[in-house]
Image (cartoon, rainbow over all chains, first blue to last red; front, side, top):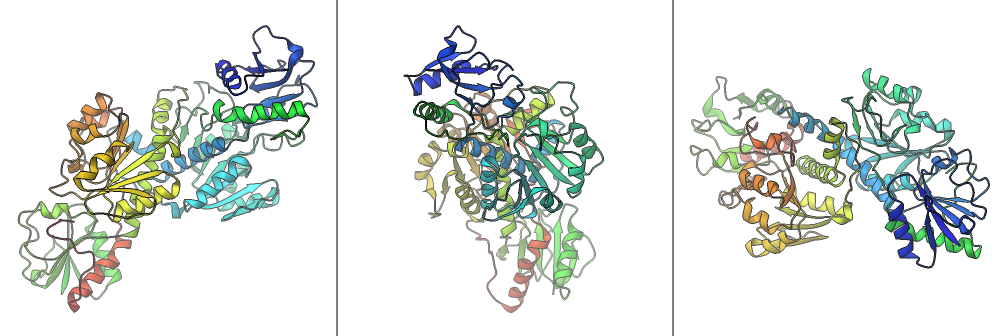
Length: 309
Length: 309
C-alpha cells in the first residue's frame, strides 16, 4: 500500500515530505527512485512524463495535485478506466480570485501604464475607470469561476457569467450554452476565461469570439494556454478591437523568448503563477481519498471521464 | 454677484463651462480676463498664484475645488478671516479608495515585479501574499480614510486606523493621538497615509516613524508630498527596513527628472492622479454654497482656520 509522486518540476521532495508529515503510515515514493511498483495504489501527479503511469499493476487512482487534469488526457498511454481525482481547494479558488481582481484593479487605474511611464520618466496623468463603470464577464462558473464571481459582486462590479450547464449565483447575470454566448459576450468589457480545457473549449478564445465582444474589451486568460488562439489575439490587439490582454497561461511554458507576447505593449504577462497549489493546503484531501480508496468509499472531487473536468 | 475661477493648470475653461451650465444665472470669470472685481463674491480656486486672491473687495468665500486646502495656507497674502470651503465628494473618496486597493492588490500579487520581468524577458514565478495575510494601517480617518477603511474591511483585510481625534468604524481597530501611534504602527504591514497636511503632519513620514513599523513594511503615500521626508524613505528602502513604497504625491509636481524616486526599483510612482476632482461631480456643492452665501445660511464643508482642514 503506497503512493508514488510523479512530476517533472523540482517539487517532488516537497510533496513526499508533506504527504509523509501528514500521513506517516503511508509509504510515499519518488517515481525516479527504485520502488516496489506493485505496492502503489495511488499516483499523485502533475504534468507527468507521458507513459510514466504505466507499469503499476495495482494502481487504483490517479490524483492530480492541481485543479487541472487536461495534461492527463494528453497522455495516450494513460491507464484506462481508473478513477481520476483533482484538487478542489478553497485557497486555490481564493488565490485565483485575488489574482484576477488584482489584474482588474490594475487595469482600472492604469498601474501598468504608469510603471512603464516611470521607467521612461514620463509624468502624464491619464483618465481612469471606476468599479461602477465596468461589466466583467466570466467564462466558466465552476469551483474557480463561481468564487471570483461572488467576490466581484461583493466589490460592486457588474458581473455576468457563462457556463455549459445552467448556474445560479446571486447578483450574477448568467448565460448558458452556445445560444447564450452571444448575449453574454456583447456587454462584456473584461472577459475572464476560467474554463476547463476540453475538446469543446480548445481554441475557444479566437477571432470569432473576440469580434462578439464590444470594441475596447480586455481579455484575462488564467485558465489554460490551449484556450487561446495566440495569432487571433495579436490580430485583435493590433487592429484595436481589443484594448489589451493579461495572460498567465501559454501554449508552451515557460513561453519561448521568441514569442511576440513578451514585447507586445498591450500584453501583460505573468508566469503561470495565479494559483499554485500548495502542498500544505492540498495534502489533506489527497490523503482522505487514499483512505477512501482503502475502505471502498466514494472518492472526493472525481473527474468525469466524459467531460474531462 | 459673480464667481472668479483661479488656477494655474489648463482647466479654467472646463470649470467656467461646468459652473455656467449648472447655474446659468451666475456670472463666472477667468481671473486672467478683464472682469469687474467688485462683483466677485466667491473665488473657486486650485493652487492659485500666491497673492491672486487680493483685490476683490467684496469677496465672501474662498472655495477650494479639491479636497485639499493646504495650498491656501501657503499663500501669505491670503485675505484673512474669510470662510474657506473644500470639496467633500463621494466620487473623490471612492476614487481614492479604489486607487489604494489597486496598489495593495498589485503588491500582493507582485504585478509590478512581473511587468519588469516581462520587460526583461524573465520567466520566474515568485511567491505571493493573500488578503488574509495582511494588516493595513491607515493614517487619517477623515472623508477619504474612512471610506478606504470600510472598503478594505469589506474585502477581508485586517484594518487598523490612526487619527488625531477618536473614531469608531466597524471592523477597524482604531488608535488616537501620539500615545496610540506606536501601537498602531507596530503591527502595520502596509501603511497608507491619508492625513491632511498641517503643521502637525508635515514630515510625519520620517525615519523615526518608519523604524516603528515592522521590518518589511510597505508605504503608500497618497496624501501630500509634504508628509514625507524623501531622504528618510530612500534610506529605509536601501537598508531593507521597508520593502517598497507607492507614491502618488511629491514635494514638487511634476517631480524633477533628477529625483532618485524615478529610478528606484522599490518605488512605484503614479503622477498625482489618484483622485482628480471632476467638475461634473463637484460643481453642484460649490453652487449650493454660493446660494447659501447669498441667503446667509451656513456653508457646507467649511475648513477650520485652526485645524487647517
